[in-house]
Length: 246
Ligand SMILES: C[S@@+](CC[C@H](N)C(=O)[O-])C[C@H]1O[C@@H](n2cnc3c(N)ncnc32)[C@H](O)[C@@H]1O
Image 1 (cartoon, rainbow, N blue to C red):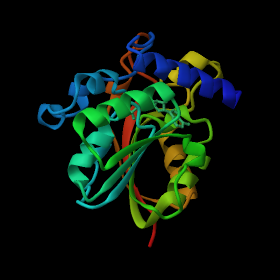
Image 2 (image 1 turned 90 degrees about the horizontal axis):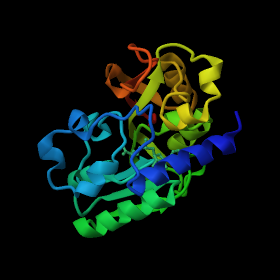
Image 3 (image 1 turned 180 degrees about the vertical axis):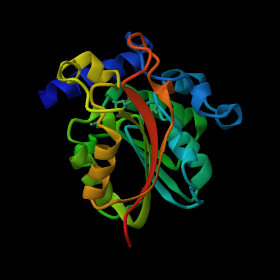
């Protein structure tokens, strides 16, 4: 598949979502209320909740401590950045990176609304992160890596920016088994968080191959892909905690 075509299709889909056009049939994205407790999200603007497009809650996979630096890969409307900011406090720092300008603008608008000075949003791609090596305590990501054709490159970038001993909390979509070639070639399925899903074993092997140690991997059931089509979805969500060795 043409990597540029995939990136353009993904960017277009999430630009439309940021602009309030909803999304686009074959939807794989569960509701916020299925992923976060009402207490967690009660202080967040409705616009942030409306565009949230995760398949898990990376901020619940492991602890975030006051003063830590957190990087959110594919931050979208910023939901996980804002929840992280409440945990790391004013002495910490949260950076959200996303390649869709409309999402970065929406997230920044809501950052100002919330008055969270410790949060910043940066336009960039996961395959070439605009951050210094070993500069981050925790990387989080929610339903984004499946959208990247070069997962090995993304995991190597993740390992590069994490400090030794740093943690990664990842919620993402993986496949029950290798997906049929016709599905892998369908751009709409790519941007709908289906076609880019790798089988779980391969996803974890790519993480390990990038130098990160998988501490825990928990399948989260089929709720991430309840769109039209076969009753048993070919993909499911997975929560992973990995660490960069000391
Ligand atoms: C399914 S949404 C998830 C957004 C957010 N994590 C959430 O939970 O609401 C995917 C986001 O990842 C971004 N994205 C996808 N591929 C990316 C890449 N290679 N580099 C940077 N951002 C990317 C998209 O622009 C979109 O905002």
